[in-house]
Image 1: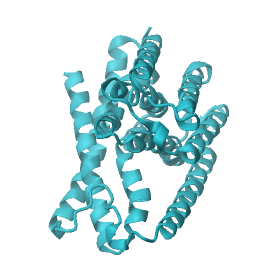
Image 2 (image 1 turned 30 degrees about the vertical axis):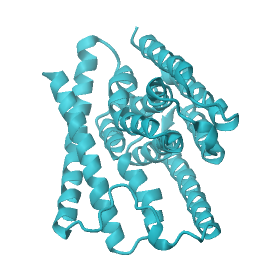
Image 3 (image 1 turned 180 degrees about the horizontal axis):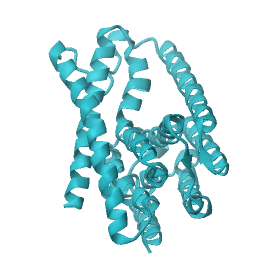
Length: 317
């Protein structure tokens, strides 16, 4: 039953997160916020809402291992699993795209996160530092996007790509319904998943940290995996790689930043000995794809997937 409850919590989280994105995006567009700003802020935060609610709930419940494990485990899974499995299906031609700057921001975020972790706790000071770094990264991203738009002024404002979840014809009552479903469903799903994950940890005699790094992290990485599989099949490698880079940056800066402001979270010493370095190592694995224009083919898919399976096994045993 506890496994069913965990699965139900995960499903509610994912559906509620999608509903919140749809409602927030269409509300923002209706009140006149530019589509570009909506894409870079509301959509980014909305798609990270399940992880955010899990981390907040876990912190409040006194199980910081799930909160931190969810983020650290998700970032590792996003590189090794989310890029590895789609590469087994179709080659991702990352050589055609330039993601160097966004990658460097993600790498800097990872190093900052690890440095703060060695303080032993993520408190309000760490939270403010992480959120300050997020504000700088978002501001720089918005400036870059506006400059690119001005340089490519041939494309009119009408041709601007609509953000995810945008529907100009959506009725006002539907916007409100999506917002309500998202705002109600997210805490409900987070509550079910965190409590079930804690119970599973007790059943198997493992720490909440291990459950956060594996069960919770894999579950919350499923949307990114689905998006990346579709992007690989459509030969949209920039979407696939950008999805992973953006998600990892938000996980570190936004999710832990907000959760740390709500309640301090002590860092499990095992994170400092092992898991943070695995996360950093998986981040560095992206260097050939980002800087040396190496495509992610089937061989890399096997390597990345095997590394992730090995990591999960090493955490569980």
